[in-house]
Each structure stands twice: as C-alpha cells, then as structure tokens.
Amino acid sequence: MEILRRAWAIQNRELTRRQLEEVDVVIRPQVQGFGIADLLKMDVLVERGKSAGEAALSSIERAIADWKARMRRRRQRFRL
Image 1 (cartoon, rainbow, N blue to C red):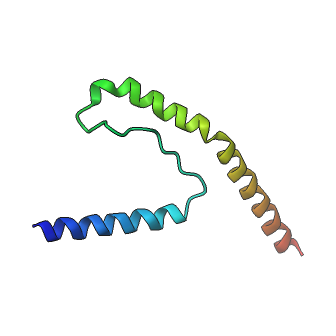
Image 2: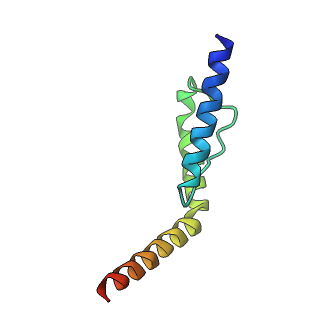
C-alpha cells in the first residue's frame, strides 16, 4: 500500500509541475496549517485568498497585456 501511495504522490507532483508550466500567474494564499476540517475558519481562508489575489494583480494585468499583444500580432499576421 505504501508503494501505491508513493507512486500516486510522485504522479501528482509531476502533473502539478507540468500544469504550472502552462500558466501565466499562480496565486498561492498562505494556508499552511489549515486542513480539510477547518471550515469554521473559512473567513480567515477567504481573506488570505483575497490578499494573495490582490498581491498578484500586477502579474495578472501584465499577463493580460501580453496576451492581448500576442493576439494583435496574430491577427496582423493573418491580414497580410
């Protein structure tokens, strides 16, 4: 059973790594120390998520601007 658990953990870690390579922005709220049973602390978790999102706003805006620029270049290529 331990071998299966380790294999699953390795597979999950690799999948996460590959997915993160595909994204422009990752928002990581500080949730260490919280578990699945901490639903009574949801207000704290939501606030941490909001704070992390606000901290990432400039990165999000930059990613959107980069995407728009790529789309403009792509449209121009097809017009020629």
